[in-house]
Length: 554
Image (cartoon, rainbow, N blue to C red):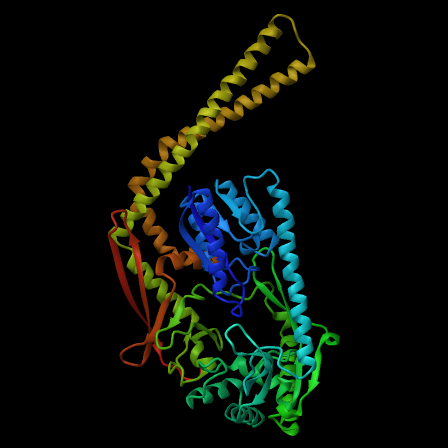
């Protein structure tokens, strides 16, 4: 039998030799069974709590394709430490006829007790993860209470490891027992600069633009964005809201939970009583008066925003925020950022808006109505040709023929059922003619005749469709297509969400917006395969559409 192996270890603190150890155990079992291993899958430094593992997904795809018949793993926890995910995966593999062998824990999918075995094992594997999570959290709490770093990196500080000189790791280095923060003088200078600029009246957007213009690396080493500076009201996110800059270290602010349906993680804020707060004056970067000035301005801005929202509440649009036809499709050719709604119902480059001219020089904005009308006009022009009409007729003919083929079995069933009902009616009529009559017999006869009429109407409708659909459609295909093109804008705006996906299928994943060569207007460039014919011939179209003269500050 053809076999494959899957191995995994969880964190970058574990050795890569763990993969070799697991593989060696699996190969030894395969040799004993006489199986030939043709594929070895391995995920390194990835938690078993997630299914988003490249090699794991490749293994599942190859299993579905029938590439091998046996899967060898060191134990069931290598597949997953999520009980539901593990059970789902094992059931899927077993349904595909694959034998699953857990070398170390003795699991064998051919055993009659396999369900009990894996049920207990998967439960223990998940409980182990919960226990590990609790122990890790407890250890981090201890580090936080001692003033050590128990979280990620924070701009303005560098990490200094605390080593134990008496203990060594597996390669002979001193074991790191904790990490402390120290002020990074260069980054601290920019923290003070950001606070000073905001206190002086500059907006976070303007501050981000100035930092990018001066070439200052952001916390992630790229360009600055206003949200990283401003943060979120009510939370201690963002540089202007983080109390660590006045020497107040707060840990345990939030916890993460995973949606069981989507698998996505969600951040949840913890109650104030759960916070671990430590005064660390040695980490202060901002003096108290400047901090108070900045917090006062942030508070006033928040109150002003709340007042505006309250004033607009009666006029606010209910339901989900308004989504436009080309949302998510427009990209700036200069910097790659999305074109988003800015100002009063206009499109503009988000890179220029949130990061400044140093990141993107395209300051031009354009009315949304003009963008949509011009792009739709260009699309209608490009797809209103002979090749498109022929493709429309050909694909519609296929759909109609497929529908006719799909209804044929129904026709056969209906005719059979019609014959059955007719036999029932004939027998009941014969019984009545011989003098047998009762209210129950009369009701049964009426029911049979009603069902016969219903089936007859279904057959007639299907026969009429098969007789008339193709002959009626084909001579009018060009006229029908022309009418669809003429009403394209009206049709698309009927359901914007569905229409956007249809447009994505036509124009691709992006429409590039760039300055025209004359520098006075914007131009949209659509690069997409509008028509893909069965023979593989592709008609590539590049459409240029002008908008309007440059309008600064709008």
